[in-house]
Length: 384
Image: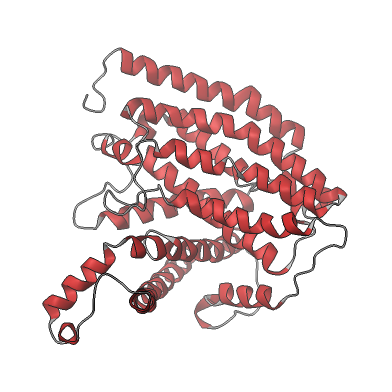
């Protein structure tokens, strides 16, 4: 009970901090929006007329500028990544009964991500003399860009989406498919043995697990009859697809762990063997861009995708807004992706690859056949 109480208190403080940030950031961005020459002129009368001010605020929130920069764009996902990183530390410490150092600030270390960012920014960006400097610097930047680009087609609700696409699921995997290339680019440009071995491991692991991951997605796509994430969520109004395709959900979850290179699938960064794998030569903010931002944004992308495909997306009881249900479900999935790090040991690389090709690929294909058979027989499980 004490564990649950401490975690709930921590979550309440996080929610308060998020509300404050989501109020301050739009104000600052609104000022920038006005300075850049907006199409929504601000007049002095709006300051004294609540109805005009509300109408102006709603119009500003409906602009592409707001969607890209605030919600559901970069500010939201960056804040989600920071909270997920802090939540991972607190959660795993509670699971493993670990006692950490003194808190950075009050409220149980809530300022720790700020301290980490300041520490990484203050460090010197060391580039090995034998490294290919151009690609060595580009790799972390491309990793962040790729992770952020995938957010564009993820709908938080039917109205809150940056870019609508009828093949949004394919777009997400097309974007995520560049991650193995950036990992190999970082390893090759480091011109060092340990990064190269880690990069090759990352390439083998990501490619091996991307195939069953994509196949596990096809079952919800077949049930919904669409590759559009919004249509997939609408098709779950009667029953969530996790109940119709539980095997696909399990395969997706396991393959997502491998895609994120998280324990027990963190072989590309195995410390006893490869120091830090393909990240060995990176330090300072270059290291922070990859592990502190890109990886956690990718964590959000896969958690949100699982929510859209298997948990009914933003669908939930009416009194609470749809945005709340989507964020809550995604955060629960994120938590489930974080827990194995504090529970399971690391696998061997040969066992890891064998599991992908010998088990998860077959399970994904099996559930795909079941989904196709259900559709062809004309079942009305989801209200066809």
